[in-house]
Length: 296
Image (cartoon, rainbow, N blue to C red; front, side):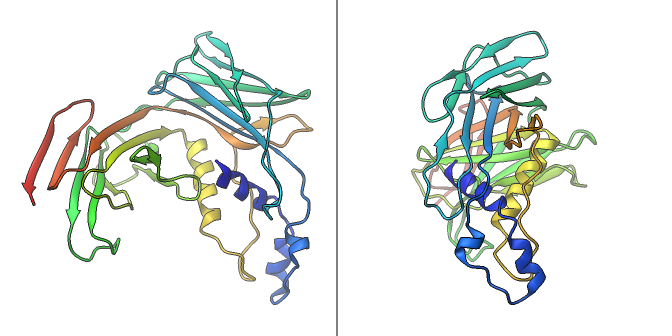
């Protein structure tokens, strides 16, 4: 989450607007990375696949990287659902607040409330239905591809049963380490005409790698937030580009609080498998059944 706070800090710098307007003008580091207002950053998440709901609270820092991240450990954090269930999250360490007393369920609405020094932050998110993908395919590429690297690649096949637009974020772990963070968000939506959508994860694997693929369904506001955030990592400082702007968050604050971050209620499909030496493997969700074809 550190890279996320770095980009949030950059987004608060409005002096870059001058760069776009003045052509060859180059501001000094002190002007671009000068002191900016420290804003609360809230990152909340509840899913139907994890037993613990987690909220991380911190403050933004200057983009020059000279300050340590400031975590907030004195907040009062509540999580409620539309069935009357509620839980007070306990602070563990470094801004982490967690609870296992309230569970994630598809179709329920969740309300997150945060109180910090008399300031209030809140958000509501509804947990969407899971992705319509019951299997993924692992294939070996031994020739030049769009990835320009040989190895095994994982593809997700999503079928669209109706005209309801759904949004997703794909998270991948390799040998116990998460591959994609806020600087590499893998997002897609199923507004495709063929009703079958293929997404190939832009990461190659080798035989023996342990892989966990999580397909997280997102509400439209959360998807738009992550999509806006992803564009910031694809934009470079330039005298021809507009200044950075904060992605639109689903968090709301009172008149004295301008929160950054998001609150996400996600249904999750999770696939866990080990890369074998077969050129094509079909991995079935929630099952040990694996169809293997054409061993090398």
